[in-house]
Amino acid sequence: MSTALSVNVNKVALLRNARSGEVPSVVDFARAALDAGAHGITVHPRPDQRHIRITDVDALAELLSSPEYADREFNIEGNPLDLSHGDHLMPIVRRVRPTQATLVPDASDQNTSDHGFELTKPEVVGELLPIVEELRSQGCRVSLFVDPDPATAEAAKQTGADRIELYTESYAQAFGTPDQRATVTRFADTAAAAKNAGLGVNAGHDLDQANLGLFLEHVGGVEEVSIGHALVAESLFSGVESTIGSYLDLLNQR
Ligand SMILES: CC(=O)[C@@H](O)[C@H](O)COP(=O)(O)O
Ligand SMILES: NCC(=O)COP(=O)(O)O
Figure 1 (cartoon, rainbow, N blue to C red):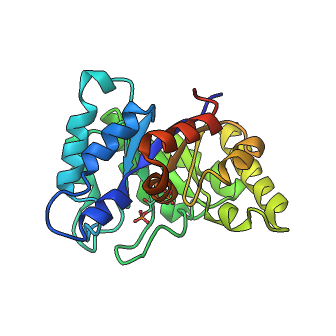
Figure 2 (tube, rainbow, N blue to C red):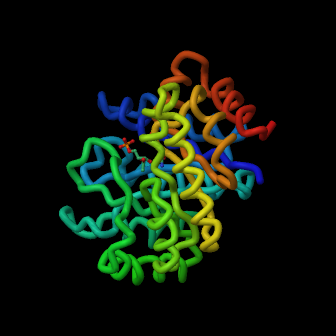
Figure 3 (cartoon, protein in one colour):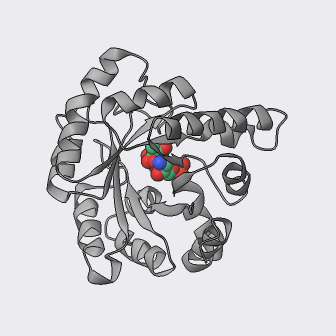
């Protein structure tokens, strides 16, 4: 199985928002990533719009609607259960109709994503069921952000979701330490449990060129990795085309 690369452009928007204006352009970065061979674009439009704004989502949707990118995917992340700023995510997904929605249980004031859904709790599954059903009814693939836990992966099936996304920060932290083997084994076990439950497997958070290869070597059947923070940082030094090419080499996609 080949693993697709979805480029998260949150951090391009973060830099852009440091000043007024459109420099650097989120759309231009996304176009360069796609032209270099990235399989898709990911955004996480948080309620405070600290980086990705709703206008960015619409501009990227227009870019990806271009015939030249007909085979590329748009992945929108967010927490449909966080109504602290009103219903933020679902109106966006209903309007844009992305290829995939990745549901992430972030609170609106979190610095970044730092945990997955507790799907072994029936009440969490119950809250997600109607949302997953609506998204899938509009043709949107649904992925649920989860911690590395086989029981959680198995429970994800009850929501009707298509995939899980493995939250890989603990892997990135363990990479190169004595905990590496045990940690990557837990991710492999979680991925296997998801596959056995009939779910696809995505992965993301703190993946980079240094740690990605070992992860894919040990965790089977990963269909998509979404990478942003490290990739954008690496692009500052090596350029977008070269950086994307390096990731595609790691994914054996060139
Ligand atoms: C869900 C996840 O781990 C990331 O996709 C998330 O988008 C990171 O959010 P920030 O870019 O705001 O840190
Ligand atoms: N779902 C993970 C993602 O989109 C990007 O995470 P990161 O590479 O910015 O940590």
